[in-house]
Image 1 (spheres, rainbow, N blue to C red):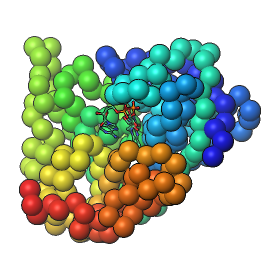
Image 2 (cartoon, rainbow, N blue to C red):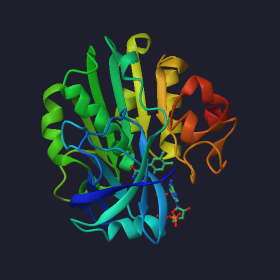
Image 3 (spheres, protein in one colour):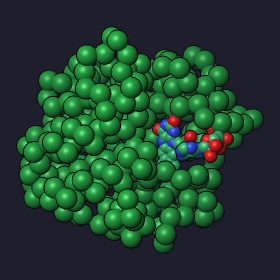
Length: 269
Ligand SMILES: Cc1cc2nc3c(=O)[nH]c(=O)nc-3n(C[C@H](O)[C@H](O)[C@H](O)COP(=O)(O)OP(=O)(O)OC[C@H]3O[C@@H](n4cnc5c(N)ncnc54)[C@H](O)[C@@H]3O)c2cc1C
């Protein structure tokens, strides 16, 4: 439960209110080990701790990378950090994406808004050939063109991954798709039996995507999604993140849809 000290090596602004921190340990030179989809508890001294997913890969930075939206007390304190500042880190926690289940399959990665952050380590791993999928497609929806995350990485991703990008509200500079991401997903040809889906975004978006995927013949057991709830201990003791019979911190944040369908209530949409 004791946070380790990490230094902010680099802080970059993605767009207004959303930024990425590159952190390295002040106590160890060993590269941190984690699975894509896991999260850390980041402690802004004097403000508190919040769960934040890893958004980068060890191949890219010998430490942790976190992409954060400034919401309230703690994330706003994290937003004030500058290069060279120190924060506390506990983790990694939780179950990540089951990469091994995607071997030889068509992998559909579906992200909404900041939901791309916990999926970015999967995309980095795919570029290095892990897992060896048959085909990979990223469906990514952002609210506005200026809120499209990780534009620089996207150039590399396009070499190996089919990318379907859409924004809810376009401006005059935007010449891509406009509309919610369920629209291109609805018209996509999906081989349900040979596909596996990793999904992360606002809960309402995930519920609509899951309903669509089920209608297209993707089995419940092939859909994985990452859930968020307010969290305090991250070790399954405090109960803040209880969801049905599960704790998001220790049983998730990545769940197989088949095991949580009762709590998602898709058919009520
Ligand atoms: C497993 C997990 C991984 C996460 N990964 C990331 C990440 O990679 N990047 C990131 O920016 N955030 C992530 N979050 C969300 C992040 O933890 C919250 O935004 C943060 O805890 C808010 O704390 P705060 O003190 O800044 O805001 P608070 O002062 O606690 O809340 C401010 C406002 O934000 C609302 N709020 C709080 N938490 C959330 C939430 N989870 N979703 C929507 N609204 C919320 C509150 O209801 C309140 O209205 C993750 C959460 C979980 C559980």
